[in-house]
Length: 165
Length: 189
Image (cartoon, rainbow over all chains, first blue to last red; front, side, top):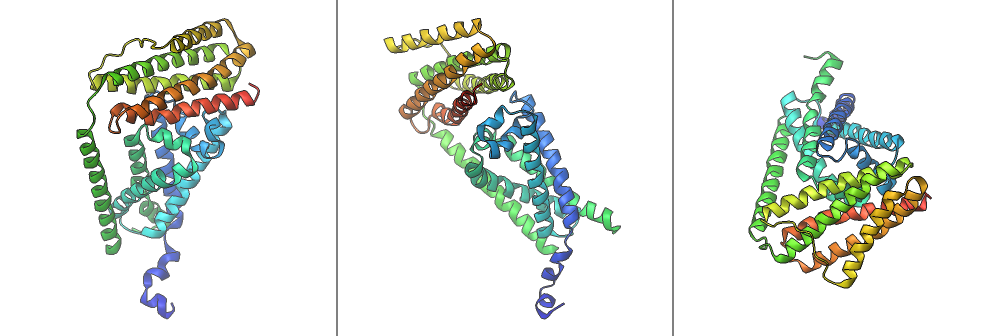
């Protein structure tokens, strides 16, 4: 290690963060989040496919609300891609911590993602989904908490991969 | 690791504080919410009537159209307007208002209501492409009128009116319906 990284060992370790585990945990969390949101959408009468259509509206606009199966697939791919990237970023920030710490950090991370999504990204890039999420603000918030909380899997998956105890 | 724990705890506390602040702000606003007025009852009744009409027309589209996207559009109308109607009836109940059949106030409004009913009757007799060619332009116009009505109502209500807040949430949904109908029409559905 050089002088700077010797003085700042955290930086030297940034390459050794559990990125693989973060990506996989992000994927799993994304799947759980979208499944729960589809169940809630179905139970409230909005239709189970509404979450996927809302996400796909980032590319297709309101036409995503009536598109066929291809639209749903695109919505799913967008959501899972973001989930994986967010998991990677989480692993890069938090590193290899205890499961309980990962859960707490994940909840905070989920809240941050919710805030950035709700007040920043969606109004600018997906007004269709932004308008619809405004009709169910509580559930929308909880979906993001679920995603963040599921990132407790990062240390578990990392230990499973490396064989650490 | 300790730093991460501290940062995590700090973030959770900070976010919780922000959320509690937002809730208490909303509560404060709720305490200043305007008392319901006769205009509230009239507007909610009109919204209820529009929702019921859109639900019926949406169901017609599901039955009568042969085009999968028009059918999905009909289903979307039904789902969204059922959701909107639940919010309207719930708000009316909270405000102790009874939803009535709105009475037309001007000859123009009476004529509009008659034309809408005639349009629904006409749609019942059509099917396939003929249905789509009549249904989609009717949806564009019908939603434009509903949006105009709601925007007018929104402007007349006080800022803290719960009816105004509901209108501001539902207006984008109506605009999406109008846009969808225009897009389907352009695609030659």
